[in-house]
Length: 313
Ligand code: NAP
Image (cartoon, rainbow, N blue to C red; front, side):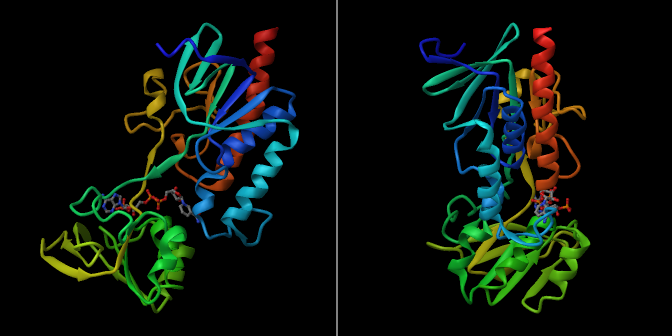
């Protein structure tokens, strides 16, 4: 049971998270005259703030991530949605009401739209934690600048690893992409770009077993998974892009996630609990893009209106 002495605010819709999915859901809900609040503990825009250039969102041939985030935020706020900078601490069901707790307020609402996204998975190897921020990074856009003329390693073989690897070549002398298989998972267009870049080298069938260095990253222990041979690779920095884990811990007790924590919805973004919807990267889906999050958000914002109307009938 959460703290009952908190100030209470009654609203129609609470959106948790202000990435592209959450912002779009808020836009649709507020434009349908629903009293909508967006609760976000970080920068509105979510992961796009950590993306240098967006080139696959229709309508923008090429736009800087933070600029797109700002434009999305501005358009989402046009119809009266309220943005609160706060962290959600819990959620409870109370009949048809859903109670969303923050440190200083509880929101009583009919609809909750979960748009909490996902975070980068850690490698979980020796040295990773200790050297985090001292050469180990999960954000090329944030930290790439510090590695001018340095030798970098990127771990992973998906869109993020390959795209960010290419991005890092504008600073680094050399970027080595270490992947655990001999084929990349990334989209072909990104693969082609990386393979054509003279600053990029690939190390196939290999995993990082340790990150070493006194006060900053100096080298990595890399094991070839077919021969089991371990070698030392010199590097000034390591960028880890080995997939995502959902930000869904808060919602575990609702029974709406799969075994890995991704939230299960139908095509209307409804979860197994009435009045609770999920959108964007936190959802169990096979494609995580700005465009898919925006599509999810429009569904959920629209369905919020339908759901509240059905309660009033
Ligand atoms: P991802 O697609 O899940 O790829 C993760 C990569 O890391 C895979 O290649 C995987 O290898 C590897 N990996 C996983 N665990 C590992 C471990 N413990 N050690 C070593 N390697 C490991 O994740 P992502 O690249 O972060 O992308 C996340 C989502 O965002 C995807 O849906 C992606 O399409 C999307 N995204 C899109 C764009 C774009 O459209 N421009 C850009 C970035 C991200 P295996 O291949 O062997 O499984």
